[in-house]
Image (cartoon, rainbow, N blue to C red):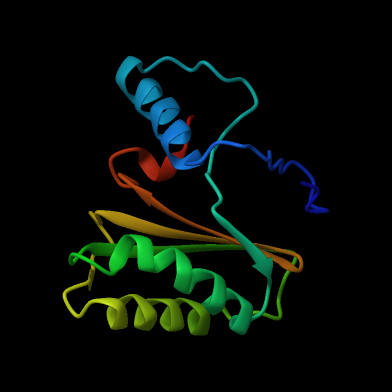
Amino acid sequence: MDTGAKNICYITTVLEDPTELALKILQDAAGTKDQKSRYIMKPVPIEVVNKANLKDIMDGAGKLFDRDFLKEPKMFAITSNRLFNNELERESMINALAEMISAKNRGNKTNLKHPELAVIVEVIKGLTMISVVPEISELRMYNLI
């Protein structure tokens, strides 16, 4: 997928759960302490892609959050990165997503240091990419290096 930003590459896959593949790669790197990649710094599995406006983000995230936050209470964190986009306010987006997660199940609580699940929101130009990933603090924010 072409984002229009330099040094960022997104790869489309037919895998049902791209999070599982990224998790295996990161767990192997953390377990062996070997750097097996020269150019890849951060494999982030993206589950929802939509336009970079709050309404579309909330629509896409709602379906994704039903899968992970509806049934049992979880500790969560939300991380956000923006590149080449100054229109979408970071704080209002994070607050709206946190309110949505809390509305799914009143037992869901924020834990920024050791969350069970982390919501990663990447905003690049006019696109927003969202994923829900486990073990983000244990795997150093999904950084390979």
